[in-house]
Length: 495
Image 1 (cartoon, rainbow, N blue to C red):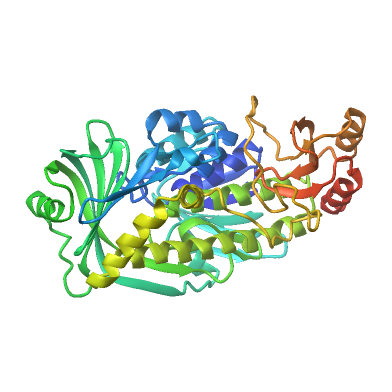
Image 2 (cartoon, rainbow, N blue to C red):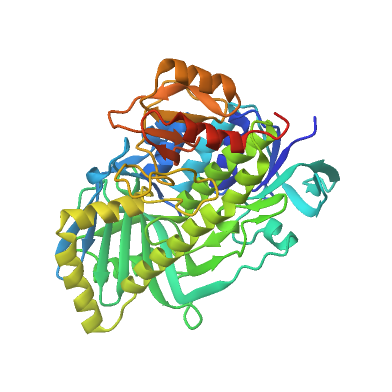
């Protein structure tokens, strides 16, 4: 059977995309040019919003069991004065940062994808694509050298910063690079003063030392800026003794690295494509945007790109909804998120790299004073956790009560709810108060769009929720007309 979608890239973003499409019954193939999954990774945290997404996919529990739930993060200056970011303030079923190496995230996603009978084709490379009116002709080269050509309805590039898909559709990848080399290492540590399951960020006059717990028996990921990437490249061949010297200079007294399993260096880039979509081809994750790892947003943002696109594409492939509005919404929604992520991560990196003593003093003192406020802590925790993502300018936004204090508003995330069954169809939901007969009539009129179950709410109002949990319509209690008007616009034209 001809696949409807070709997913290029089997990292966290491509695996999320493939698993969601498979859950919704979309025919697909997923390829990766690497012979084997990598055992090295940059990302070490899965944030609350991503865990909510994984919960909807039906696989969050395996992630939680494999990771370390960090309830707080610690920011510590050279005088060892510490401030804390309290993740327990998060209004989420997952009020913590789940510390988990990206290699483990990929393993768990592969296992989840296996449950749908979808196999990753390795090593298989995309050689070319040609877009037509109703399809995309793609040419693949398999590991044995044989080439294969076939048509698909859609192609999704999840193939990272050196994206072949992005090159083939002629998308530029403009931006800038920080002229600084960064060290990354996986180490066993002893003598840590902060709680062993919580990350710590040390500010020193030389730069940053960040420690993230990633496994049992005090296994940590270390990240630290070194120097000019052009002049020095000093991190490529650092010994354990040299890494220990850096730890002793920037970290707390008594902290010792006993074993180094792996280390490498990288450079920080800030880039984003001009459009996440080119006709029947889409870009997601690092193929569309790269930025500083400050805040641990990269992998999470990419996985949420995939979840955003997957339900929309699934509704189109299944013939459940009109394609125009759904397809037009992906770029404005996710490019806006990408731009904000670049901006915030860039500012965090800039603050961490301040070298002037006066600037460092002001940064540390102002941070200490501000972070004592609970409202500031809550805001920062929500931003890091992905709970502040809003689609305020989305083409999918429908009716909202202008000037009303009703929460949540259109384009905002609806507070997460627990689901006892994992849904195999992408459907909108109603939340709030509605008469049973009215709900029955709506579900019968829009069977391919609306789930028949209502999500109970103690608040007065009626919300139409997208399959990804964001508000499409915020109406007054009993305002069925606003719901009908929105769903009518999304109905397949042949219906």
